[in-house]
Image (cartoon, rainbow, N blue to C red):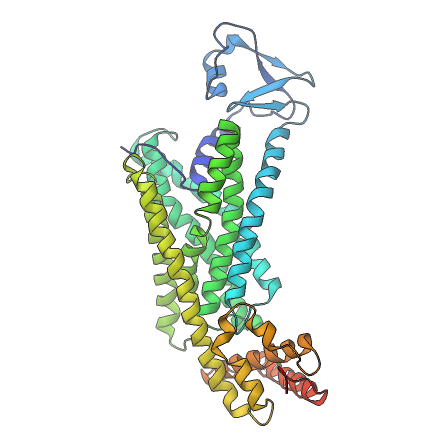
Length: 427
């Protein structure tokens, strides 16, 4: 029997709020159940709703605008419903969002040679924050109900919650997040032409995971504040967002790696096997994370092991990003080599393909004193790199009108930049 479900994602929040979905007395935006003065209800009850149902004689229905509703230890204004919850949600968002955006900027900056378009990164971030989270909540409700029936125990039973957190939630959540990557791959094949390889998959997977983290942590911190006040708010924020904020990014990056490998291959079996293998690794990491918080918590030792182990995975994630960035550099070198002397000068080629590009701000300083200005030189550099990856796609056998049109547009833009005297770095 697990000791306690600790820090396992949407499930504890979901489990404690599941009764709100099925409770027939839930129209709390119109009225409030107010406790009457009695020696039996002066204490601090953890579940006032349960106490109300078992002891209805101590409560009366109060429809006055000043009535207060007791629910999960939270006082709610009856005239506006969950006004306190909304305020706490906003406060939690104000704390979580800057941390998550910091991780977002770090991941985006790690993609040095072919940075993904910001609008697309924001799009996949919103997939994780909204679409993946909402569908995961529905899937977890169904999974928790099925687990309850299979174990013959009530929904709130610790065994049901721990089993669902460890074995159902990882499958559900990595599937809802991974579906966004599959959709991106399909759109890239048909139109976007942005998912070029494993590095792109790892970046997009990490960003989807960050979006999921944003919504999940806000809900979790909000609930902790409702239950235990400022101490719960602060502790949950530090443990989940600050210390463990890259968890979902790391999990879903595994799926992204598989999708990226499939996108860069011409073999049908790779298209099938790589995404499935990446998805299985993501589920395995997620399940291990939750097991260390439930069945393997061991009086708190599991939590310590979880942080140490998954900090190691976070480091491996960034090592993988660096190695894949060097792989992208090789692609740029190979595909632009035959353009030297035509579209690009030798010094420009050297600056665009330098290993030092991986260092933050190196490229910004290297473009100082560029002919035509830093911004125009950077745009020319990005066009050259994009051209290199289009040529790589063509080398792998991908031929379509969209790709050919993009190549023509890029060559035209680069030629015009050359004609205006735009040079990458000082001549």
